[in-house]
Image 1 (cartoon, rainbow, N blue to C red):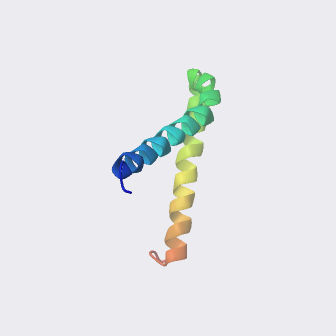
Image 2: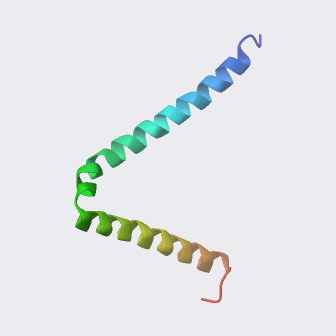
Length: 68
């Protein structure tokens, strides 16, 4: 009844990882040409850092971890 159970468990992990990597590659592939110019590279990095700071501050405020 449980023949190959662990093979199936590991197969689903590999499927999840490959699906996630495929989604990330297809998401960031259109941005690759933009990274060749320094101006757009700085702008994209600024947006990324700004977004991470915004999410961090929002979560800190929601969870009551800071005095903001």
